[in-house]
Length: 134
Image (cartoon, rainbow, N blue to C red; front, side, top):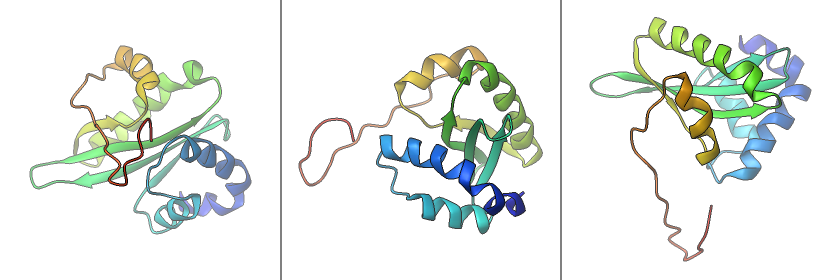
């Protein structure tokens, strides 16, 4: 629950900063902390903070989705199947139709054996003209 966030922030923040440093998600660690505290996002503790996941429920006109926004930690092959199973159960309990996993291409090969398929790709254009991976 959100009551475990601040006492464990010293373990959580480095994982979150690591993933946010790799992408331009539009969030800082403080933004995510605020959303977690307001229960707009959910935090998942993996193996006593060996890894974390942050999710957010998207409410669409026709259904809800559980979006896996951030995942960070070591030993991913050891805990990812259990995490996905937990998230799938949570999503079903919340009335979601899909679990959507947002991540760089390397995650595709990790989640595909767990039942994820490609739905769509995101292409990004920097309106200020910067090229390359954002």
